[in-house]
Image (tube, rainbow, N blue to C red; front, side, top):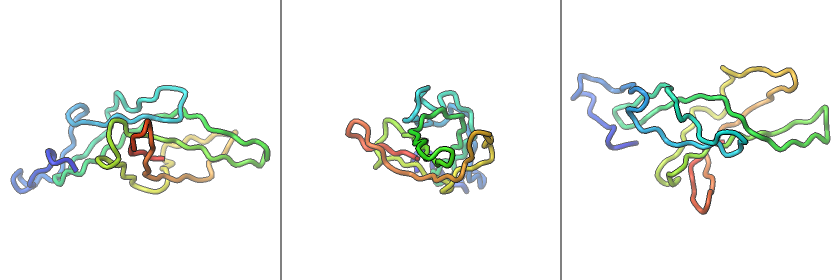
Length: 140
């Protein structure tokens, strides 16, 4: 939790959280590791953010991710594939910052079905990715 974003709610009329506009609070640089497209995510993001008086900050950005996956089609048409989406927080050591996932599965609220394949399940976990001998916080 950021010390600078902490306040005593009773000193401010009981206000325990705020929702700053984009650009008023630092947002981290997040890279998509397994893409052939743009690596920097959320560069012009205007997603909602809530900052609580204890310094806890919730930022919920969204986007469409173009990723590549290694396929094994040897059991086609009965094959199952695992495709990872790996997002890494750049420029911060994993001892200083971490991702905290709200759930262990990805939401399907905005999922668009595809007639060529079915999504059988999902798993979301916070981890550490090593890039150039640096341990960086990541979510897979």
